[in-house]
Image 1 (cartoon, rainbow, N blue to C red):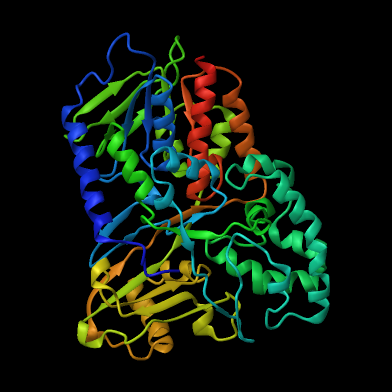
Image 2: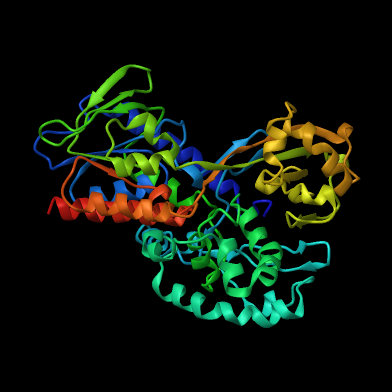
Length: 485
């Protein structure tokens, strides 16, 4: 994790500029969204990277495009916002080096250097046996893994058994389009490692190497499909911090596309006799409106599908009912200048750490802050995914529940030093249980068959990260262009 050193005041000005541009577009947009006789029409629901990338490519293909976004801001999980005393990322904090479609789009927009950056610092894990580099989510280095404290010699000898599968997956599966790995969606990560390495060795690798990676996304290893993680472990690309900040790409698209913020879609009707769907929505003034475009692209988070889309196909409905999210619980204590940490301090731990305080903690850090980045001195604490349900059932505020852990890990903190508290607990990423990728692929195959009035795009049909959402948006635009050729 990071204290968002990539954020700059210039980026903040770009955000304000982007919001102003979006507001201006909304203000001048006529009540009739589209002009007659100027090409096919498309409404994209959702202004995250999936919706924005789909809209960008559709407009280039000659479609008249309107984008409806329920939030005041544009960018979805790739947005940077002021959160209390902190200006920073709100969900995604970096991008994967294998995000080919995202990098291609950024280069097209003149952001080649801004979307690239330095490797994201993964930090050292404490597993109760010692400190070690557990790696990121994007590579599985056998040599480095073999140095993990606590691994038995027998387990170390067996690690090479993983190489053939990892090499095959690296060559055949696109981690940004997980439907390419449907054939591997047949067992959980836990089952896979125990089958290849044996139960004892498999459990050691899960405990010290795989579960710390899964904990970053809230995935239980014995429920999560192996194809959710193996494509990243098999590759050498790193997780990187964009030099322009995580929001640089979506800010640029927001400034170029007709995004209508604070526009809430109520529901999308079944197709009429012409195959078109009507979108019923509330505009920024909470006035009821409707529009029937040639094409609707539903690029919302998967958890909203059942609420928005009427009369889904059986395969679409099955996917929507199986789309649910992990929870991330993070709290930041903002400190007064007098009690700012003198230097950066941090820790991150495996879920099975023998120390119960550390077992409840995914990571923490204390930072002196940086006024140039609008980062005051603060202490950040991330609750273990395993213990998040316990907190939710405790009827306690997150900062109250987390205080005993951070006080034990960083004794210097005192409540009298705290001037503000930022709690940004949220739905995090979709789960990818065994069988989900197969459902995803079935929906995509169905929507590729012939021209239709409604298409789906986003991480829920691609993979649980922003690169997958971007690739999904661009992919669905290609399908629509083919259908309308």
